[in-house]
Length: 442
Ligand SMILES: [Zn+2]
Image 1 (cartoon, rainbow, N blue to C red):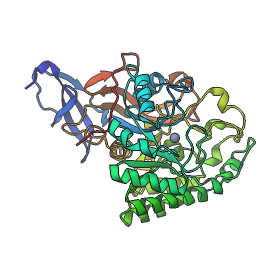
Image 2: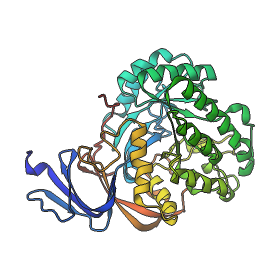
Image 3: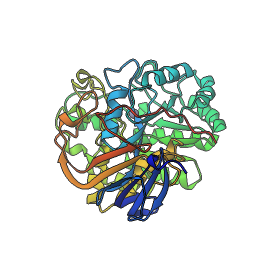
Image 4: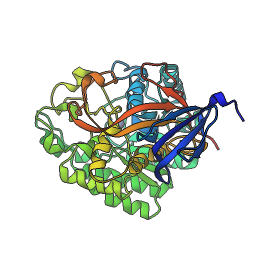
């Protein structure tokens, strides 16, 4: 037994456990969860926190965050992004390999990322590598160095230093990754189905990137996954009509998963004001009928997780019109409340939200042995959450570098009250307790 001083007990009448929410006492020994006891179990000598009716959730895992440091830290950096994450109940982020300079497409670039992030992370941070034309030979070494998987594009990424793979390159990359048992996550839009759009009219922008552009790209991913046996994942699914195809592929035993994002579940195209480029992202936020169908695909388990695709830029890059503005919605701090606001109204439970935003993403990134669930042996990443609090999003609350987001002024339900990171209470005004994670080895 360790000294009692390292032990703390956190109690709540609503602990979101893997088998459902119930009253419990979580015994934390050092950095990990040592036991799950009855709510009123005695704990001599331990620090005791009784949250009463505040819910206790596992820390969220957000596998889709563009931090942009080094190189474009003025867009978003590790200090600002991870403080926003902490405030939003996200205790682990996985950083995307593009928009930083250099992009994370080599071991050397990964080392530069890790060096840049070191000492200024308020939550734990893992890294995706990038698969781009010509770096196939780097993938095994990057896997060995601890990236949690690889990302590729099938069309222009918007960053010229991160070019897309053609269908032959996609298949070649998947063949290499199948041998490594590493996952390829894919931005699935087909440039051949996309037209250019400009101006202040959001509906013209949506029409320029139709569901068919997602469908054609996902077909290529499914085909390559089926042919190579690799594990593939569709990032930011927007077109709900693709859910049937994804369900079919899963049913046929193809190793495929999919995510969507809070903004596709919260907003609808009909409500986007003229010229409101803070809503611009690719693929686009579609209409309310599509949103309802996305929710049903999520509730049916066809979509596996909900992650932010937090992708900020300089404020001046969001100016202009729907043709010229940077595509990206910033919501790292708001995702939990945004999803819960709608989920609660639909009669879903906190268990559902935890499955979509903690356990699901942890599994995608291969981090389930430590993250994503309140279970014995896992890291004690815990979030005290008031599921009934109602509040309005105000720019002054946002800890991301630039307070630009379509959620400004929105009324949300559910508020993060306290967060523990590996057993230590973590505060945005405190010191950075986050660690850099590598893919766990058996
Ligand atoms: Zn992204």
